[in-house]
Length: 392
Image 1 (spheres, rainbow, N blue to C red):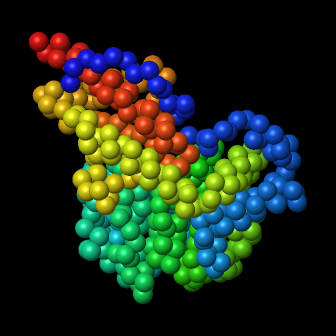
Image 2 (image 1 turned 90 degrees about the vertical axis):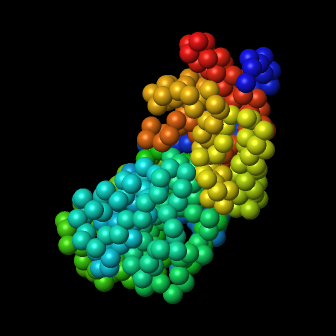
Image 3 (image 1 turned 120 degrees about the horizontal axis):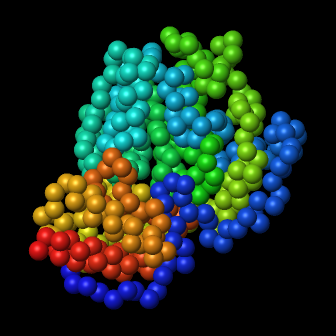
């Protein structure tokens, strides 16, 4: 790759972070002007706002009427932990991990809950475990989309409709961007700061009727922190799923989530959200096929994420570097783009192979992805020239 001139067209928005993610197009703080600041979330207006988040979420995603939706503390992490601590134990568990967050859930189940019958199906970055080996008559814990690897499950066909176990799905970088087969999922979790670009600290928890039945029939063998408790006297605390949050939510963040959901509705709902994310991936696929130096970390197109799009560097000059030098070169590419103000926060996750990670969710305009691509080539050319000169 030879030195090239600096591109002249810049993305209108340089926000390509994989979390917190880009705000919806046209967002400004004016969207928060009606937030119920200084008011109790337990007052009638506050509860109405929280219920609006639940109702609009159900409508946009098409969550079935029998599935409960709750707003819970501590982002997606809190929602996943809440589900695992409350539901796991009666059956053996299959844990799927192919990147850092899935690995984190394995650690919690094996070392914190200390379950005895745990089977771990692992794969390296860029790959996915053999889904045909999953036993759905056991409980199954998995991420729909590996945020740090850019590898997703291709669909839900591998989950048995007549399963005996529960499926617990961390969908934080997938929901609102990928199809969720609700009939195959018993627990679905996500956070506001991912696909719709909301603010941090709040998680969403969706429970199927089968998950509720487990909650009401199973008493965990370990002490349960207050923020994880979803039953009282053997019955589901319905208020959690009727806008009575366990702890105090930010009403500013609530207002922001309502704004994001209204935007999703205004552009055509879920079909358009999915189409926008797919278009972003397609734009990067078109560019990468002719770049000569970059490729997708996901090894097969069927498992390629359209949100957390992870790229590896395949150029010969990069392959000649040792591990530390490769990490430094990848960081340099991201740093150059940051300094130019054309792409913020696109370095690979710290535990992932050296490379780049570009958010392609629906709040990112495809025109910005297209404008970014020449800049990727430009930054890589600068770093190649520097690496080659140093080697010489």
